[in-house]
Length: 315
Length: 262
Image 1 (cartoon, one colour):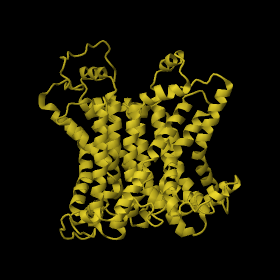
Image 2 (image 1 turned 180 degrees about the horizontal axis):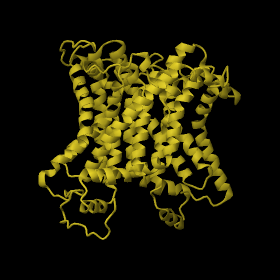
Image 3 (image 1 turned 30 degrees about the horizontal axis):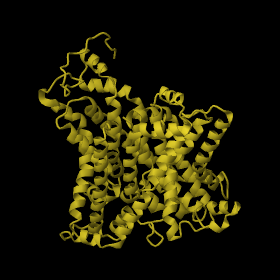
Image 4 (image 1 turned 180 degrees about the vertical axis):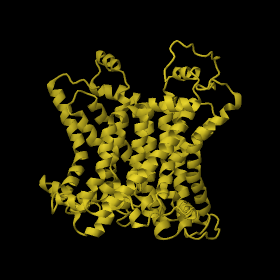
């Protein structure tokens, strides 16, 4: 394909922003034929996701066991969900778990900024921080169960440095299991924050920093007054992805603690799994799913609106 | 970024960075060491000569390939249309796709299971490929749309004057110019499929169809207390992911810059 240099651009009227860039046609048929381009994506998503979500809504109004249709029970499942202490415990665990998001963002941003400075072995650090993000939770779960076991490496390390008093059965103690899962989550997902910030930072012009430095700004000042505000779009992206990630958290909990001990790490997602798959209580599981969906969707819409109102360009 | 004028400042930054990065490396080191317990490197030989391991590996590779293919084609076509073409009710379609991004997979397990059963797709690769592709498409469309929107409009004008059809523009201009974002989509789709745990567990009951992520569980019951073999298998599972990331790293970062941050 050769580009014809010097071809004058077709005349475009100011304000006709609907003009089609590729065909140059304006308004005729309003691009009906172009629907073919989005058809594969839209049809697949509609058939798999929208259909299933609709199905879940319907199931939530029945006492289905997941195999047979079951009878219509109205809003009984929702009434049950609201008075179920496990639902509230699961929500409380998710709320606490949200703390991993700012932790991951802060760590990712600092590491990204340091890697944009004149340090050595950049490639190595980059790979080390990003490997956890691309590693399957199913693969790391047995490793972490061992690392945090009563006779695991974390306790060994504590003994070695003379902090033997702090040793725990990290995953066996109801008050420590959730924080331990949070540590593993930070380990796994800081890489995503890092890579997005790293990519974002390459887009800030070097002259911005030079100007700040001429004004006598310190490194800390540059971080707080230039880097942090300029990465706003990335913060929002990571915040939305993070909250959705927390609400979706499943593999980690399922494979490392299974929701225990004593339900201390139960999440809505693992509770849905347990209800639906283990106890064949699909109607109730569907009602819990609808609650989870409402939370997830509500948050995302709220965030996107807030960001748009603030003048952002979209996620 | 940070100005490190003195040697001491540089040393300090390097040290700080190392302290921050070390916790990320330690579990990986623990994993490598764990894979060598009892019989050392022989663990790897045992795992590799286990026919089930090769079988699971192949199954995951097939599912990943299917998932990548579908996601790539569907997402690139849609992203091109959203970025550069006139579409009726464009916003409606676009946000309709984005909303699907927020859905936790676990909430649609039962409907999916029943649908796959009705269609006779249970215990076939499709039972895993289709939901994974559908789940991955919205994020890929979002990334690719932002990237393609950043391409200069003048190239399209020139192509049109040359008599290129819309599909021709897509195939001959958009696809070649979108390599960085294509790398992101391919890597993401590969990760999603290769690392998926739940769908193969529930939708593939035939032991010969199982995915690679079932290996740790499968080998734990198989080798019992010999954790070395289980962890060695885990290392081998991670290897393709790591190699793929390293091979695409450069494209990947450029794609992230153009796609995720616009």
